[in-house]
Image 1 (cartoon, rainbow, N blue to C red):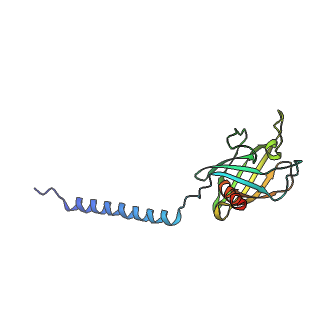
Image 2 (image 1 turned 60 degrees about the horizontal axis):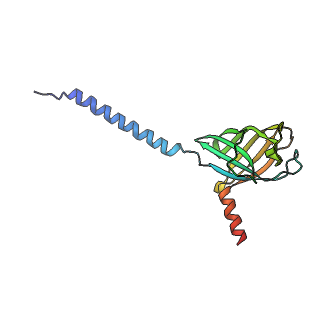
Image 3 (image 1 turned 90 degrees about the vertical axis):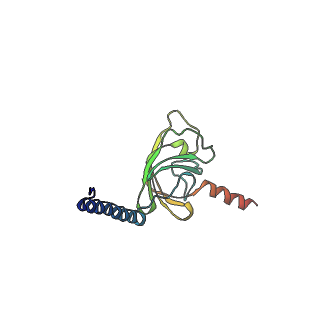
Length: 170
């Protein structure tokens, strides 16, 4: 009653060893070469290097970023409003290599210029090219339809902005 055939045992031993070796190779490759993008969810205080030319008076803006892997959804909000308002137009984009981000979409001019909403308030096409730098800080440029120049900006996380304001007030 020899239930164990040498050829069958050798086949199963080679098959199991091959699967284990393949698993080890794929795991080593993933640990060395695949990395999740950094988490950038949250509110960012957007400081423009110069005023928006299409506005009489431009105010600070808040960039609200939502992330799902490499895909991004964002909205621009006036800094003097609460973050719970419903934003009609959104920006979409993705995180590219070397921690670069790209967003595009439409933004209501009332948000850009901090003016009260009008019924027929025009929208502007907006493209944002950004680069993540240390401590979650973002630098980049904003391109708005109707404006020939690109506007440089720096965005700092809202919590970091609040901490620095508290430290300066003490």
